[in-house]
Image (cartoon, rainbow, N blue to C red; front, side, top):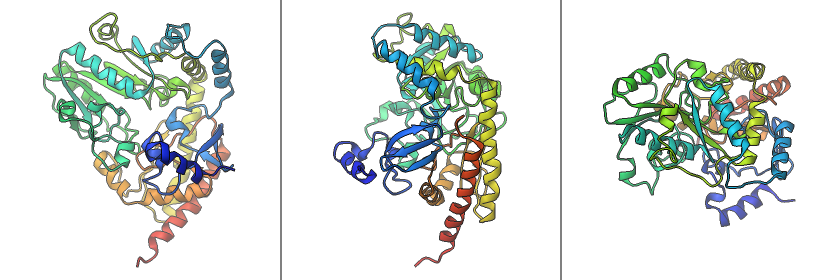
Amino acid sequence: MTTNEELFARGLEVIPGGVNSPVRAFRSVGGTPYFVARASGAYVWDVEGRRYLDYVQSYGASILGHAHPVVIEAVREAALRGTTYGAPTEGEVRLAEEIVARVPGLEMVRLTSSGTEAAMSAVRLARGATGREKVVKFAGNYHGHSDALLAAGGSAIAEQGISGSAGVTEGAVADTIVAPYNVVPELDEQVAVVCVEPVAANMGLVAPAPGFLQGLREACDRVGALLLFDEVITGFRVARGGATALYGVTPDVWCFGKVVGGGLPIGAFGASRAVMENLAPLGPVYQAGTLSGNPLATAAGLAVLGQLDETAYGMLEGRAAELQTMLAPVFAEHDLAVQLPRVGPLLGLHFSGTPVTNFDEARHAADNGIYRRFFRAMLDRGVAFAPGPYEAAFPSLAHTWDDVERTVDLASAAAAEVAEALAAPTR
């Protein structure tokens, strides 16, 4: 039998860090990463045959749970017709129609192959549409790994303990302005676009403060800048129409990913017809991709969106609310200071005595090392949270009430273990 350690050792020889995305290397939580062999519903199994109750769910992409039969059948049927053509298909038109129909104010979209690609293209579009150069983003918000947006990013870049990236030149970020999250910045007529995660899900989950998103809308309107909602995580997860529907604030530009691909690689960005007509072949802003609108990804995305009605969103939110409500006394019983923020079906976990409202506070909570201990204690008991303190938890429609109860029972034992270790005298 192949072991996790053997596969990791082999990976280290041919893949930088042994993994294809840094957080998977487990550096911020310690130990050897588990290598997934298969998954079904709320669970994954590693190559050694061990089962984990999974709250990663591909960082939110698997909203129905892993290997949902409707999605598998849609992908199977699509694959039998061919896997890529380099030509337009009915599926990409249908997926674009479905996305536009769900999001208030959105009129046109362009499909890409990743969230990073969507955000990079959306910023280029905003600059082309406004004729301006400056980009405003918020500390702790993660918009993928394009050069201009890496500054002070959350998610894996924060977990690596770096503020940006080597290889990104000063010129690449010279027009990027970083502001604190939940504070409306002062803008001027040089700003092309303000990029924001409407719900910051890449710094352990931080909700927008009351008035923050509306304040950004008003600030952009005053100076003629565009407002961009990065909904790669929140899109079609927090509500049928994403954060726009949840908060009643309409941006000028959107980015999507995760859910809209049904677990396959995809991204999308969109705006009003007037803004999107700046894109080639209609306008001077160039963007392209050989695999954009891939027929397998569009088939999976349509299958998933077809399952997400109001009942489904009620169930998703209910599972997250149950976890939040039941976990809070477990930590309190063992005197572990914790914040469990929740926005709809998204759940955060900050080991902090006070609410976390920005990146500095999220980093302070992450730096105390308690998340690492709790993660390891839960993984040892067969429950997988994200291997880093800057990610959210993603209950799916496959998570049952029994799964929630099991999580809470095991969290009680894990919290007791962590509290005992913290109380032990150090030498």
